Length: 81
Image 1: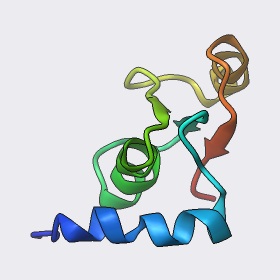
Image 2: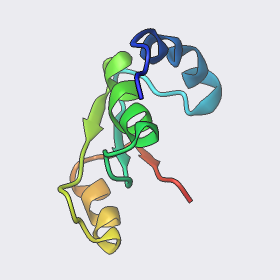
Image 3: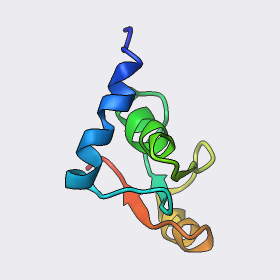
Image 4: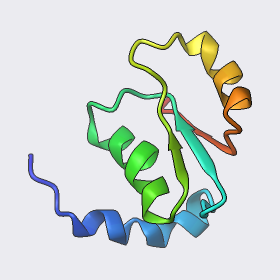
């Protein structure tokens, strides 16, 4: 599936109303980066506003995420239900 690159830039309009992400934030997403939701929310959204994307190693146990958030100063946590 082809996705338009302009969609990444357009998503910035939702940041204020959704999670208020800015350049000072460090976002950690719990999902795998093999689908577009996680790619957008966990990587491209932070980068589009100058924030940091914290990417857990593949296969990271979900129970380890709170410790990783604390150790790396995550200010926003994102995960699909």
